[in-house]
Every structure is written in structure tokens, then in C-alpha cells.
Image (cartoon, rainbow, N blue to C red):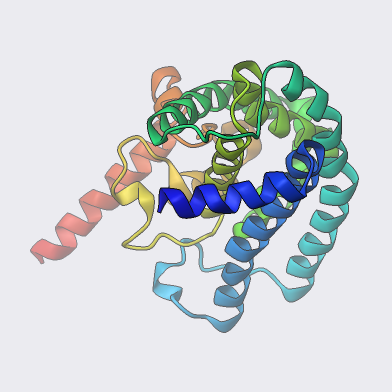
Length: 268
């Protein structure tokens, strides 16, 4: 397996420049993973499949879904791509490389764990600030246009918020200067996580059922359902920041209430 990956990587670095791989390659990888993982949830909602796993019974209109896709394409080409190009010199300065040898799985997994911790911290505090009155009204309310989220709404946001989210995601890699393949793996994992958190479905195989402290779709869907000043659940991937600062109290109470109701139902 390692030799196959190394052979594929050798082909990439032989036929494309560092700039092409780091900027255009990263953009194409992001778009592919994002839309391939997010689009199926639109069709699930339209077809009514797996409806028993849908967190909210409300459905988005076809027009609202199409609007989301159109805006996303505009934002991705006009905001995301320029940011990737502009940040390339920073990553190069901090030591990012694409040549062989590839880093070991131990190195990559350790770095990605560090990126999750850094991103969770920055995202949590930035997200809380975005829920202050002025910033919510003028910036973050765009993301909350969809009270019933679906996968692609994860990146539907005001351009200013897109820049903030990008900063939270790339800050960890920017200060460590990783190998490009580590950056790509981090991007893939992060995109899949945020799409899952906004998918609107809680399946028996959802990661939150198996990973301790992982928020996931049920945790974040609660955030979208409530009034902005009282929503809580500000965390990105893992929920320890909400737990530490008591901003998940409402969600925990609701979960406890539902668990109690289910226990009574089973007894009867």
C-alpha cells in the first residue's frame, strides 16, 4: 500500500510544480471531497430516504438547496481559491514540502491530532464571538439561513466568515510546515467532518456513536435550531470546549429529557 501511494506521489511531483499541487491541487481535492460527500444528503432529503434518521422533520425547498449550491460555487472560486494562492508563500516559508520521502503515518496522525486541537480552540472562541449581536446580524446570520442544515450548508457563509473559518483550519498547518500530503489528508478529514456535522441525519453508524467527545450532526443540528443568542454548542469537532465553559447545558438537558422519556416508554 505504501509503495502504491509513493508511486502515485512520485508521478504528481514529477509532472506538476509545488505551486500547482499546493494551490490548484488542494482546491480540486477540496471541491471533489466536499461536493461528493455533501450532494448525497440533498438527494436523501428530496427522495425521503432514511427519513427515520433525519433529525428534523422540516425539509428544505429545492430552490433553497439550489441557492446554496450556486452561492458555494461563487464563494469557492472567488474567496477560497484566492486565499489558497495567497497563503502559498506563507506555507513555503514555514517549511511545507512536497518531495520524497513521505512522512510516516505516526508523524501525520500526530500532526493532524494537533491541528484538531488548535482548530477546535480557535473555532470555539471565534464562533462565540460570531454569535454576538452585531456580528451575528451582519455576518453569521448568512450561515444560519438554513435552520435545517444539510451537508453542503457547512461552508455556506458570509465571505468574512469563510476567511475566519479558513484561518482556524490552516493555522495549525501554517505553524508546523507539514508535508503537502499531510495537509491534504487534514483537509479531507476536516471537510468530511464538517459535512457530517451539517448533514441533518443521525445514523446508527454516525461517528458520534463511537468517538468520545465527538460532536457530530446531532450536536450541531441543535445549534442551528435555536435562537442565536441562546444556541450554545459552539464547538467545531470535539465538544470539550462547550463542556468546559458550560455552553452545552441546554443540549445536555434536552438529551437527558429524551433519554428519560425513552426509558419510560420502554417500561410501559
